Amino acid sequence: MNRFKQTGVFLLVAVAALALSACIAPLEGMGGADVQETGPDEDATYDGPVTEIAIRRVNDGQDPVAFAAARDAFVAALTAEPGVGTDREFAAILDGATFAPPEATVFTGMTQYENLAAFAAAGEKLSSSPEAAAFFSTFEPMLFTALRPKDPADSYDLAQILTEPGQILEVAARDLSMYENFDSADYETRLNAFLDALSQQPGFVAEYQWVSALDPNIVVGMTVYESADALAAIAQDQEFMTQMMPFAGSYPAFVGYYHMDARR
Image (cartoon, rainbow, N blue to C red):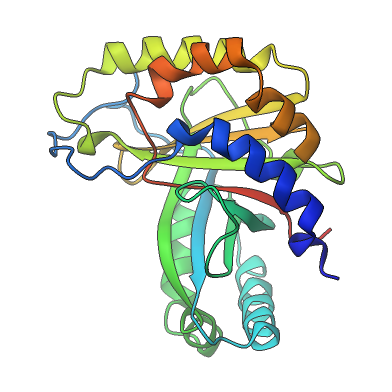
């Protein structure tokens, strides 16, 4: 049986997701806000590495073998371009919006680039390629952007994210422009308190905070958990749930999934 569809894993992660339900929620009813700035260096020119993220919902009826072949052909062409580095692929095993296995097959791809110029150059060259046409016809994009570390002092190596068998990667994306009367100071205070509490949990491995290099309103949090069992245990910690709610309840994500490494 495909390990991404093993019942035991689904049950463990589903337990965790039910308890973490406020972390990912639709933004219906929230008024749009003006464009928000997310960090002290927002006016500075960023020229460091960027990581493309593409959350893809595979089309209904799409043959999985044909999808994988089209994806692999496109990735091979992409990684042959100058300035293109590590490419990773993660399979969603739980939809954060429904707290159940995704109704459709979802993959999250990430590719590291030397800088935004390399990202743009590769995109321009491959956008009209037969590999791109074949691959892009197999899915619906749910999120596509180029990310940089939220803190300019941080440096993330994509190859070192989710390195051990059985680890779980949570990806949660937020659009700060969607929160009515958004207060950046309040957001940061609640986020930092949540991350501090999360980092103290047994089974927590790592946290990555990103901001889009293309749209500063898009922020993405990624958390690595030791295993599905560890994630479930964290979710059942009532003290942690209390510490989490001020952030998760006030700033729900617009898209998010729990993943396993699709290539391991």
